[in-house]
Structures are given as structure tokens and as C-alpha cells.
Length: 312
Ligand code: GLN
Image: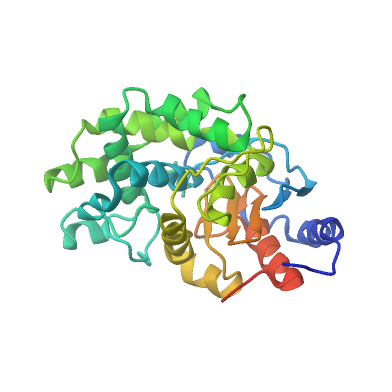
């Protein structure tokens, strides 16, 4: 797509406008380690399928990706088991909070979609069966996709979440009672808290998700030969799920305001896919009542308005 505006100027303008929104949200505090993050921070990166990358603010500061990890574990599970996933998971928006339990009982332990906590726990259960060291497998894929060998998960954040993961543990046991959980919940929770505690920057996230904008193919900036990480058909389907289910119970609102496949996390990060054009990552730790970054949602909405990157 050609555009007449200067993308660097556009991002700088958005960062400037976003400044006015500080103080409207709150940093996540239910995971004690996240409460320590300084609230007034903002970063944004855009990576294009032609390999160029533009950034503003703290785009290279690593933060806790939290639920953005659900996108990556889902893709790994899809690569491993394909459509068998849908025996254990739905693909409908939940319309309920990311950590809600209410639907699990009426729907007999089958989570609505892979991007709410219950669904992500099932995905991690599937991966736990397959990988003796899931954290290493996941980091390996992310390091390769984002050309960032230094990527890691933060032990303190993982422990902080694990020590307080009563609700997620309850959901895992509840699903086990319906036969939709294979491994010991304790083991899966260890893996889940590690995946949520992975730290990445906006720049790294744009690279790690590039395959979703590029028909399933990664763009390797070092080797100049991208890996076909996922089939083009599967990438299209992942994007559809991100559009409908990527932002918990605000998925409809974000589709209205932004209209792009997104995945959000309570660390304040959001990734957005512009199929055929590129990827966007934003970060601002202050969250709205539904757990999405206030500055991040604003920045994506403005980007779409200013660039016309919306094919809906
Ligand atoms: N680790 C967080 C949790 O399970 C992730 C939630 C999120 O980012 N929405 O509560």
C-alpha cells in the first residue's frame, strides 16, 4: 500500500497526542510484580512487510507481554495439532472478562476461545504434553522470529504471578473435572506463568508477529530468507480470531475503533496486524477497566485514522 504521509512524523504525532491520556488508566496490580512498573511510559513500533521499521518513544524497552503470549502459544499448538484443537476449545468471543469462570460451567469445561485465560490454559496444557521444556521451545520460536537471541522470561514476574494464581488454578481444576485437562494443573500453571512473564519490546513484537501480516511467512532481517512459519490459510484464520477475540470483553469495541486483528496484555502491550502491510506494537502500562492499555488503544485508533490501514 502506498501512503503519502511520513510514517515517522505520524508516529511522533500520535506519541505527542497520547501524552494527554496519562493518568486515565491504572497499572495492573493483581500480579504484584506488575504493580512495580512505572505508569507513564509509551512506545510504538511499526514494521512493514518490506523490512522497514519505524518507531517512537520507548519502542525498545522490554515489558511483560502477559496475554500477548496467548497468541504465540496458540500458533504453536495449531502447528502441532491443527484442527484437533477445536475439540477442546471454542472460537467465539466470550463477552466476559479474561479471567471469568462463569461460562465454563454451562459450556462443560470448553473455553470460549484460546485468548481468554481458560482457553490459554488448555493451549498450554496441550503444549505441556508435547514439550518437556515449554519455555525453551517458546523462547526458541520467539528469538528466531524476532531476531533477538537475548529474549527471556522474568523469573520474579513469573513467581509473583504463580504465587497468586488461585483463580487460574481453580479454572484448570474445573476444566479437569470435565475431562478437558490432561496434565497436573500445577505443572501447566508453572508453564503458563513463565510464558506470561516473557519480556519483549514493541520492536521485537512487530518482528515476532510479522508472519501474520505476510501470509504466514516470517521476514528474517538477518538471513533475508523468511521461514514459512504457518500456512497462509492458517495465518488468515488466526487473524480472524484475533479480530473477534483478541481483546477479551472489549473485542467488539476495539474492532469498532481499530478494526484490525489485535492481541492485548495486562502488561500494557498490544500487537496489531495489518495483513499485507505490516505489524504494529504499542505499549503503555496504564490499563482501562477491561485490562487493555489506554494509550495503546488510542494510538492504534489514531494510526488507523491517519493511515487508512483498515480493510474492513
Ligand atoms: N498472566 C495474566 C493472567 O493470567 C495474563 C492476563 C492478561 O494479560 N489479560 O491473569
